Image 1 (cartoon, rainbow, N blue to C red):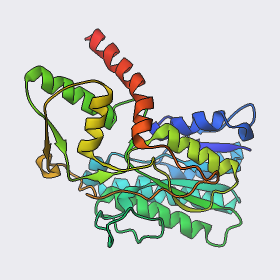
Image 2: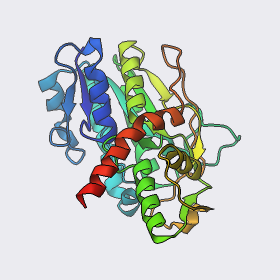
Image 3: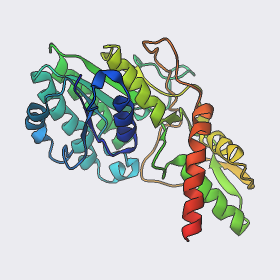
Length: 303
């Protein structure tokens, strides 16, 4: 099966390329990796020619502008990259009978659920920031393009992604903890923002499972099991890293930012074809941390 991946050098895209490369159904040459140089969100009209050239049977659309604060500062650019570009790609793929998986986000929800429970795929979206609005626009434009099409559309929402190459929440927590311990300050941790920490390698394996099972259609929430506040996640990272530093739990308002994230962004994991849920976020963090600690040690040694 010929599978193309947009955003192939991004955090999730590279994990998807790796997972598909290990899947037997992509053949000896593996997936087709479309980096930004090949498929640029600022020039999406090239999608049709690209699809004709590489002839994929399915496209996994990981490319996105995920700088949520940047999106808040430039909402029109966010809409163009995450909304319009997704619609253009979806239209070109649907016309050619090519299946498409669009990766989306928990930020399509407002963080104020009608019931105190994780968001389900059929809950009504109501984004409260430009990033969430642009990603929801991408979902809806893709759905419109595939209405009546012969091909399948899948929407995979995920949340709080972490994983290689670093510069993610666990990495930033380790750096902040080392800095505050050296200066004798308390590490401030946000206690009023709750989400579903999700490991890119696990999300990528789940996407590969959907493709391998020929079960890509519909909206799914693909996240690691369990949920946490930012503070709880940070404390687990510090515990696993054996890094002791005084901490203080604070409100998100203490860290002013351009974007307003949903305070409750927990997604209910959707059933997978195998029937097996993704592992807990704590287990995934434990898998990731040795690599992260080696990176931090190497960075410290080079300073």
